[in-house]
Image (cartoon, rainbow, N blue to C red; front, top):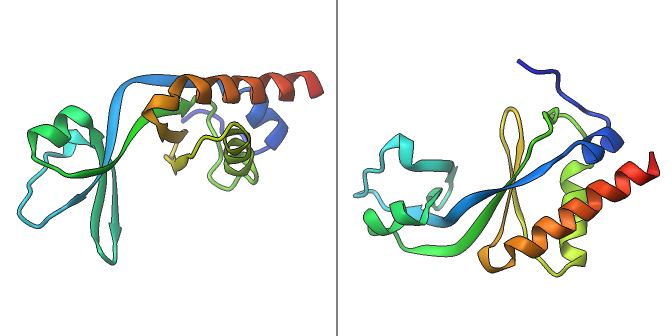
Amino acid sequence: MNQTVSDLPTLLQTMQPVLREGIYCFSALSDDVVLPHNEIIVLVREAEGVSVIVHEQAARCYGLQYAFRAAWITLNVYSDLQAVGLTAAVAQALAQAGIACNVVAGLHHDHVFVPHHQANAAMSALTALQQTACQAA
């Protein structure tokens, strides 16, 4: 496993956001839908049921209704799950640009889902955040 980073300035300086190709949908799974594991990007079990994030093609293929069409940005820094402030800094930068975000932490990276039509603006905001952190160093 790669060395994780927990220091906020280092996280911001090295986050290297990458926009992944495609459109991703937030959907609720009904009990009658069987979705193969390889189609699921994120799965969250909530009191109201199971929520998933899937590629838009999978949502259409399996007849899923979706509430949000998103672009997926991965922060390529190996962020420590106990690091403090990365999610807040990213959310603040995007909020200042008028962009909603939904952040999911994986074991290795943080993943930011933003409205698909604002993907390029989100990348600009995150790149500017990284550049500002580098200049402050």
